[in-house]
Image 1 (cartoon, rainbow over the protein chains, first blue to last red):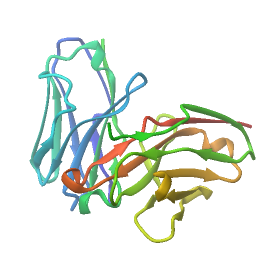
Image 2 (image 1 turned 60 degrees about the horizontal axis):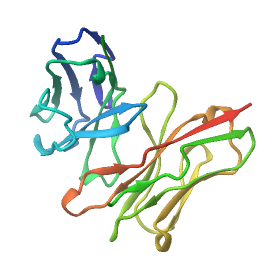
Image 3 (image 1 turned 90 degrees about the vertical axis):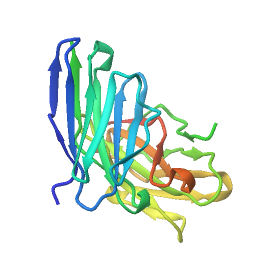
Length: 114
Length: 115
């Protein structure tokens, strides 16, 4: 099993540009989570999906953020337009059996907006 | 508000010292409990988990945690830390109900071990 795969690993972009982060969950996992980690705020849940349906997006900071899960094997998190305060590490995680075994995290995308 | 609390923001120890990191949660009912570790520059990895049964859970790398239901606690322990244990440690709770599937994380405790 390749684990949760995120791309890109690093992204540097200019303010105002659109950024798309990608995630491939573990096959068979029916939950997918997007987290943002910063020094100031720690680990924040942005949104999560169950069976490709968004369950809770209350953590999405602004309308500039959007997430989709068109199928069970792929999800995107998009920021448009990006701002310097969006700089963070974005983690994707997936789980099965309603999370009772915990999550498996991807390696993260380190986003820098200049 | 319901939450997961980790009492120590930063713990500094010398090698071979004993470790105990506190975690308390405020959810009632049945919960599943987890400790995750994040080594510098890496992603979160599962250290150990509790579902039911023996409240003393053993995980990888010599870590263990004890679930004390009456205290709503799930403290992480290690009898003798090593320099390689330097990392951030996160406690997490799965509390079921309408949020079944979601883990609630504490703010994390940074552990620094001096050689």
